[in-house]
Amino acid sequence: MAFSRLPGDVISRIFSLTTPRDACRVSSVSTAFRSIADSDQVWLQFLPPDHCDGVVLPPISPKKSLYLHLCDHPIPVGGNRNMSLSLDKKSGKKCFMLGARDLTIAWGDDRNYWEWIATPESRFNEVAQLQYVWWFHIIGRIETSMLSSGTNYAAYLVFRFEGHQEGFDWPVESHVCIGSEELDEGRSVTLDPREGEPRAVRERAHGWMEIELGEFRNENGDDGTLVCSLREVVSYKSGLVVEGIELRPQEMH
Amino acid sequence: MSSSPPPSSAAASPSCPKKMIALRSSDGETFEIEEAAALQSKTLENMIDEDCAGTPIPLPNVTGKILAKVVEFCSKHAEPGVDDESLRAWDAEFVNVEQATVFDYILAANFLEIPTLLNLTCNVVADMIRGKTPDEIRKFFNIKSIFSPEEEEEVRRENHWAFE
Image 1 (cartoon, rainbow over the protein chains, first blue to last red):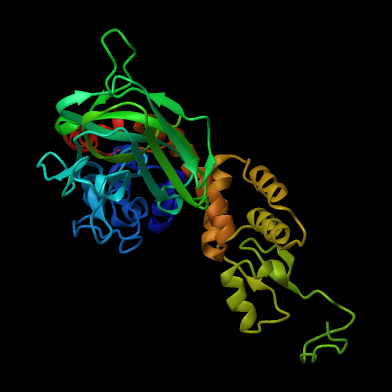
Image 2 (tube, each protein chain N blue to C red):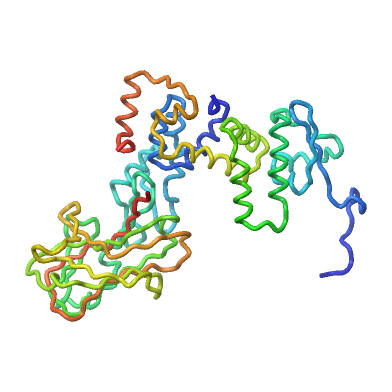
């Protein structure tokens, strides 16, 4: 049998070139494979680099457990903890959420329009609660160098409604672009469609909802800044609570 | 560019511009490889530095059949002016061989410390694993599982998400 001729560290290397999901399947093959497939040597390759780009990994051992922890428990990134990182379980690709404080929200500093509140349902210290506004414009930015390479991503607004809700049954324009170059014509998203109208909003954990703003492919992480924006400046709006914008790897088939 | 020739080393021979290294396989075959190609192997690089010039370097871990291919690989990768795309296509053809031979290449690349060949061949095997179920992996590589049914159940449970 061919594999038995290979030294352990070469087998480790081969396993780490597959995916986390494959590494788990491989550990079900035989006792010898299991000990290599579960080793720190392999799982270190599936983790993002520690102490790099504001990421500090929790001190969990072994590495496989740390990996699984990061899939279900987003960790804060950067000094001000307004961004979170988690991993997509099957592929190990990075998933980021830009917290509301990390976004550029027009009139966000004016308490007449937006309030900042703490809520236990959010992973972030504060979320943005809309009192009312006509000029609704939210922008999220992230460096493509932080994202996993060779990955298709989609951007989602993470939100819910509270209090008097108005104006979100009209579509809002969303764009995902690199720098100032638009990747596509953008799209119209309706956060609170009326009954009978198509509903692109999905439920999430902890009472939040999400709606897709756009997609893009990150090839090498050298495209500069990714910009996601949401804008509707004509009608009166109120009642929206924004947790952030999430960038999630899409499953590739 | 300066017009004066570089100072010559003691071993330089103006009539023989390319330095050839001789290698001997485990089964006694001898191969010649250009120094530039040989330097792709860290193992050979160390041996050449130690100045075993002249006598063929014995490689007891590599058969003639495989060593011939390794020499071919290193020579190709030392060739100047080959564009990335052609090289990738050439590499793909190079590893388009039966499973046992890929493993032979891996062992040779590991022993001779040739990073390009090791990466290429490990990726080939990784590709063979990706997406397969444990049963398919066992069948493909002819692996006997020595899990007890309880152990197998335990591993499956631990990694259940990978099977969904």
